[in-house]
Amino acid sequence: MTETAYWLDGNALAGLLVEVFGTEMTAVVRECQSCGARNAVGAHRAYPGPSPVLRCPACGDLALRITTVAERHVIQIAGTWMMDLPRR
Image (cartoon, rainbow, N blue to C red; front, side, top):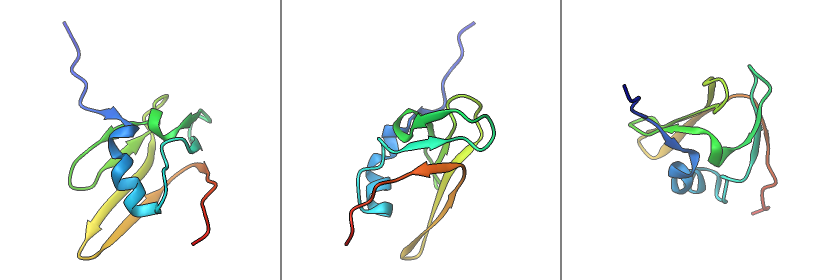
């Protein structure tokens, strides 16, 4: 029996992450709050949909949820994200 993957890698959300954060985010390292695994955002599991979700590739815990309402994004971030963002 084969298992069907219902997720993509985190790179699938690269465009949305640039829209939200204003810079490339797939190389950002995130440390999971549950298992302590450290992975680039692009290595996380992306579940696209009305509110895209990123999950830890090691344990599956929530890393990021983005909901777009009206003219804004509502973002839930979990774990420790090591970001180096340019000043605007």
